[in-house]
Each structure stands twice: as C-alpha cells, then as structure tokens.
Image (cartoon, rainbow, N blue to C red):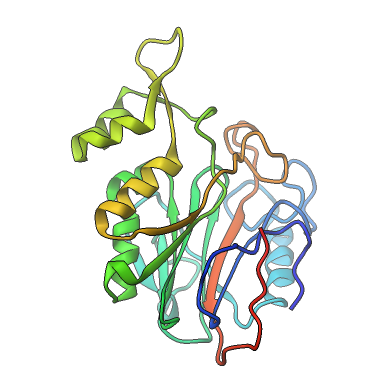
Length: 257
C-alpha cells in the first residue's frame, strides 16, 4: 500500500509481519489551524473534518484504527475491545485485523513489537504518561520477555524546546535519580528546566529491560511537518502513530526514514 510521501514509515528491524506508520500534518481536509490531516475529535476542529480524515486513513489500512480517549495516563488496553470512548493511553494487539493507534502533538507516540512478530503495541507518552509508567505497561501488555521487545520513538517536542518546572524534574528523579541527566537548567529562569523526552523514554525502557530502542531525533515544535500544541498555543491538530500485524510475511520489507 502507498502512504503519503510526507508520512513516516519507521526504519527499524521489525519482523516482516509488523507494519508501522506515523502520519504528519499532510494529506487531509481540515483547514487552518488544523491543516490538514487532523485526527483529534477534541482538538477544536469540526467533527466532519476529523471523520473525513479518519476515513482517508482507514482506506489505507487493514482495519479501523483503535482510536482511544487519551488522558495522559498509563492504561494499555486490548485493541480488540476499543471504541472511541475507551479511556486509555495505549493499545496492544496479538493478531492481525487490529490497528493500534495513539494520537500526539508534542507528546511521543511509541510503537512496539516483539522480535517474533506475534504482538504489537502503541503508547501515548507525554511526560505524565512516562512518569506514570505507560511504556512499562505497554511492554508488559506485549506478553513477552522485555529483551524480545523492539521500540520506536516517534516525533515529539525536542529537548531544546520542552520547558518544564521543578515538579516534572522531581517526578522523574524521585523514581530514578539517573533521570536527572535528561534535564538541564533553563538559562536565566530559576526553577525551569529543559527536558529531553527521548532520553527519559530510553531510560525507562532500558530499566525495564528493553535494549532495542530506535527512532527519536525529531522536534514537533521546530519541524512544521508536525502538529505542535505548544508551538500553536493549543490550536493544533493531532497526528497518529499506528502499528499492526499482517497475515503473511511479505517477500520484501519496505522501510524508510
């Protein structure tokens, strides 16, 4: 299948049965400031625009994405049981026919699978979700040894742009003092820090036993391909991170950065 040329197909050593995709702003029908591929029903965009965007995406996928009502928590649910009112920040699937999906616009979409290609998961990881253990919950939901898990870190707000307060610093350092390495003082602003979500995600995954971590390096604030809640002062759409299993292993895996 052919996706929009602007979208991201993760470059990672996932097994052939695994498919993954991260959308950008491109390819939809929503007008500014939600232009154009906005999937967020509670973003401020008109519902008919969001439904049309979701229909465009659905036509490229084997099933309707398991859209969640995300709350920055740590609940991960079975994608087979999801409807639009399901409150969760992650989904897992152990068979073809289900598309795990999370939405983001500065928070990090994290996609996971096992090396055998028998399970996939998607997690919505902003700082609250990371601190609350959403990545660990997604790893557990896969149902395999942590050393068998592959993880891909999708686009999020970058470490030069994510200003946080002492409360965020304290939440991570209280869990693991080594988390302090993911923060640096904001010059001239006492009590403020610049926070590296990618570093925090890698640290949490490594501590859980997941060593095969890929992706990262994007900044949704600086890169206009992406929606950014912070850059656009809340008037922002939502991108989607999606992962699913296919029935049969294809002869050749398609990857791009």
